[in-house]
Length: 303
Image 1 (tube, rainbow, N blue to C red):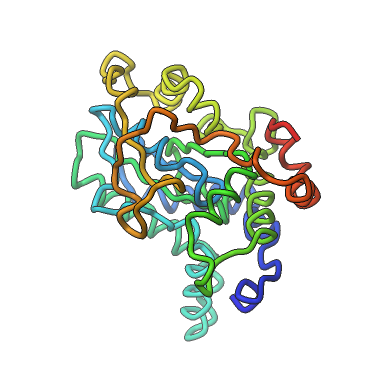
Image 2: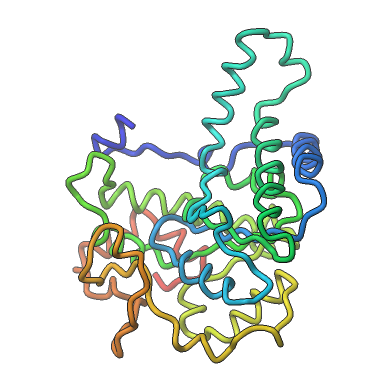
């Protein structure tokens, strides 16, 4: 936190991709499944970082009648993001009786908590698939193990638009605000982590898919079909005619502020959330390229 407040780099690869061996992963998944029991396939929408389109993707999926979004009024579900705190709790627990370390792993509590929490949320609407979201991918390698069998959707957005939107949305006068370099670093690390789950990546698996915000905006109907196919939801039950009427939530161009920004607003005729960074100076574009240009290429964006 001190580094963040001082404007220095405060994240690294390990924050996004903690090392989990196959044996550890299987153990965690078994713990989560036993704690969760037999429930409908959960859905998780995770964003590369805030301002990456998770609200939009969540809103699209939530329109399906077999989906229950934000169960328990959990409008954000940062459990994965809190993995470090769960590990700290485990360390504190083991401090009282160190021999428990023989039977207790670093993330065991997290896996059991995730499973039990999903079981409780499913009980609130046992006929539907619960849908949760979080605009962060810290500790991403843990996702498939503490949320085993869940359908995970990873949202990417051009890092330059993410930085532009973040700087316009969040107060620069808050101690926790991030500067240009910190935002670019976070986007690069998150993108590199997400791309390991690409079809040819080392973490590729059938339960995890990647969507780019720009693609969803450009051809919403086709990408909703991809999302429904990934989750296993029937296309003929989806209200396709409602897509073009969807309001906007959380736009950085909104004239309201604070909590009201996240309430639905009517989409203006000229609303276009893509390539807003094009108005940057050449120096600003070059600066982002030095910090995260390789990640742009990795994710398929023009550099």
